[in-house]
Length: 437
Ligand SMILES: Cc1cc2nc3c(=O)[nH]c(=O)nc-3n(C[C@H](O)[C@H](O)[C@H](O)COP(=O)(O)OP(=O)(O)OC[C@H]3O[C@@H](n4cnc5c(N)ncnc54)[C@H](O)[C@@H]3O)c2cc1C
Image 1 (cartoon, rainbow, N blue to C red):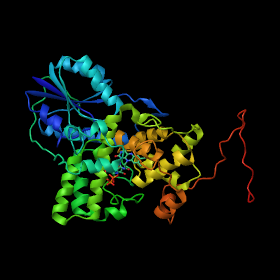
Image 2 (image 1 turned 90 degrees about the horizontal axis):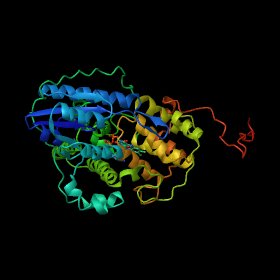
Image 3 (image 1 turned 30 degrees about the vertical axis):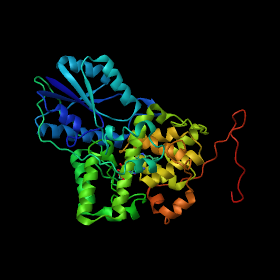
Image 4 (image 1 turned 180 degrees about the vertical axis):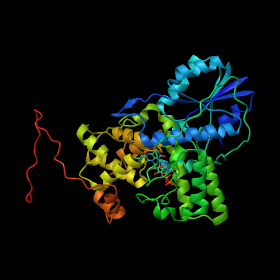
């Protein structure tokens, strides 16, 4: 009997429950499908760093699987066409995937279920808790983070599980070796995809540098590889399981003691968990302007404002620098994301979903639940009990870039642009000349 395991954003061998389950039979076909890009909110397809990280992760997964006598077949195209072909060609009897939030992700499973006559088994995704543990909460999932965290306080989370062997690939399978990506990481954010790199980062940041000890003080910095864990690219692509990160944190605390910093890191992992379960519950409401509650959300869409924000060419030098950092390196710190998002939503009054789509394109750690959940939070249509966040940009600059070094390094100072204001017949209205001009 041949099983097929379809990798999605779980590009690892360790602590991959679905892979372990299907790798226990007679033969296993491991597949990843690169789907065609879908246009959404003026963007199309992943940016260079996101693409690179994904390619590196796939390459590493292929190596790991080969070291276990397995293979990874990577195909380009529509999974709805490719998977049924494979099922027929290799006489597949069972299909397995890991749970993942996202509307397309869910739709694919529904359609595969309809199209295939074999069982489709959906396994635990990359979460600390499994569905049965959160089940009681799910129908009435608290709308805010704090009650969610409190409700899970007494629940014992799942630990990472490892295995050493996999059933072989089906006979007759021919697999091309993936080629390495010619693009290189930006020197400001040198991260490479793959389980091995993620494990190394976890070990180094926690145990070698013990950087978690100052996490609470440094986590809001706008850059610096040690300021926060930097684990999100591997978590988002599934190169690391969040359970293995939590296990490592437990080991660290057992050895060096608990601190406010270690506690805080655990709270951040729970934020990720909160957004994950919310996204699973909210389905396509995650992409609606007013969120799941259908809140009234007032915005306009001025394409030139959006284009200037994307290009880092606004009247806000810090925001410009942040956008340049994102596009050039594929990365922006948590504080930077909050500032850039607040500017687009509040200062430029552009629909938050366009900003979220731009982040989706460029962030190496793009994760549908965390990205759209955080954007909704700042726009006041998501999980913020206070109804949105409006950051004072002057204050943020004074706090996080007081000497202007970050702004200078990422070329944030741009010549002031004329405002995009037009009259009723679409003629540009020029601002009156200032006294100094
Ligand atoms: C507008 C906006 C968009 C965002 N988009 C994404 C995204 O696409 N992918 C993503 O992983 N995170 C996203 N975040 C959350 C957060 O910014 C990143 O997780 C964090 O910056 C990653 O850096 P780190 O690994 O050093 O985090 P750490 O501070 O070291 O935290 C450890 C881990 O906890 C989780 N985490 C931390 N903060 C958050 C948070 N606010 N929400 C959810 N999980 C969190 C991440 O998995 C992170 O790796 C977004 C935040 C904002 C404000």
